[in-house]
Image (tube, rainbow, N blue to C red; front, side, top):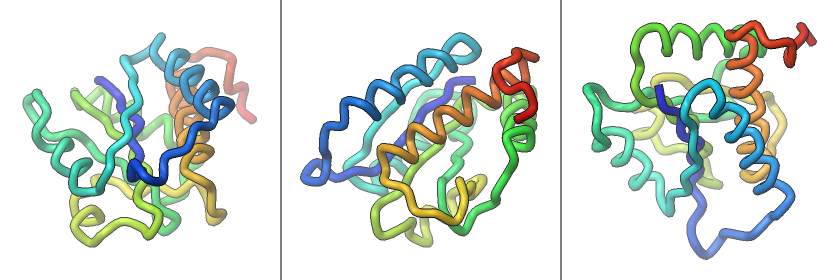
Length: 151
């Protein structure tokens, strides 16, 4: 399974945040020890949705859209979800952060899972880092690595 951390950020809204970029790269590299991972930014929601279904593979990508109305999962529950997808042969998993004004109905229908990091609002850069850390944590839980240690 290959994992992509996606975000929708129009070019005119993109800013450099060296600290969050370094953290994101660090967690992607760490997670990459368990499964191939990358990060991708899309200009529009439509571009993201198109990429979910057009990439090579036997099946479309499994799309987890981050949304405050989504399911709130513990780290263990998220790990179980990732493990189930991995063990079922899912080829591509995309964790995506949507546009500033929220996901369209088309995106919500396309999503395989709406996932909430909580009821708080986070800027895109920070949400990407938190999602990457949680994926890394999930992979260490699945591998029995002591990083998580139950807290």
